[in-house]
Length: 527
Image (cartoon, rainbow, N blue to C red; front, side, top):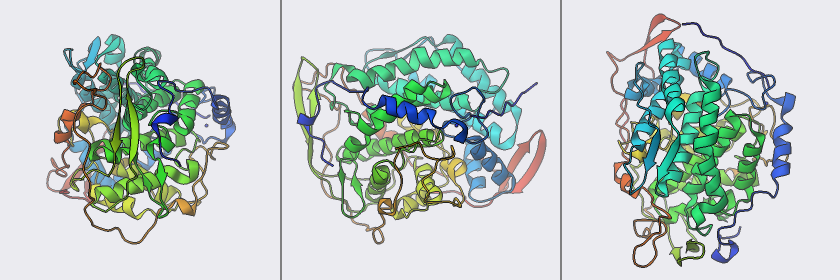
């Protein structure tokens, strides 16, 4: 089929209940400054973006340089890229010819005919096929991705359900935007119609959540709720070249009143260079989800020259190191905190988390390669816990490799393939791929390296808060404030390794020419 490739050129305190105004989220403060930072990229952004476009494309989780690196490394059979690509080709979602099943209305949450699994399966099929196309050049995968995305933009009109509809909008909004970003230059992709779907179906729900938190007090919802919404709005802003949306997320990341802003998500920085992750007081699964989502927000911003990774002396690095050490079974401190819950003008209550929850060292999500490679390879910082846990999780798979329920589809994954990189020549300089960090965006420093002695293997003490909703008043009537999908926790399983490889050979097809290469690195990776 005819294909055009347009190369586009263009750019500590603890959280306290009394510190949060019920339901009020201030988005206006600093937006003008953040917008100015976005505009300041201008000609500084690298080649590969669009003339007349506000942002570099492709420029969400993957840039043109990233895609070219993946293709070259896999073609050369380089480790660990070949093992990462094998995880992709073995996934059932990554097969050309996947047939989409678009719905007019997607429901997530109790009290509705839930069909959101259809959406997330199709989204991951679109992403995996699009990524596979960029690596091996087989246009059948691009055709499949475009067909899936076009079918959804033609039919989807609304997301409904309980409070979980906010999770659906946030998670699947940022993911579908990333899938589309990989095929946006295809002649057969309905770009304008897809933009309309993002800006009328997904983003408004996420924007509403960041503004009024479903009419709950602002601390009612745990960290990951905010972060799903932030990821969706940011991805929409970049995809649609909407600087105002991007600026709102940057401002919220730095100063938002909800638990997803960086100082509320990571409220205490220790003298050891580790920083407590708030949701570690809840449970391991949701803490991993939050770290992965914050990394996603930081990566998408970085690819547009906005440095959130380094903001506030690399606060996110310290929080991610903390979660990595804890998830590996290490002993970590946790300062008790109390958050307010409830509905504005309705019931109210509070909940105190007093210790880090127990962990299962076998639990994993495909979140670590992206974060680890940023800090250790782009920045040249020491991150021993991140390095250990990323190696343990490699080669990372994606949706469908970590259980059948929604928790296994919260991240797009395949970080070993997508984010493994050589150390940058100017590592430690604090510059983004956009040719320099945005003014005032923060920078990494050696003090952000969080590099104590070798990780301990102690099992942390304490207990997790009780299961169930994050906002359940006495009597059990949640008022539809915070269903959490916690039933999916049991399905978060470790990847079982690479399958569907014939004779130990990785088969590549590049621009219609078949090549055989011996698979290097990897192998079945038990957890």
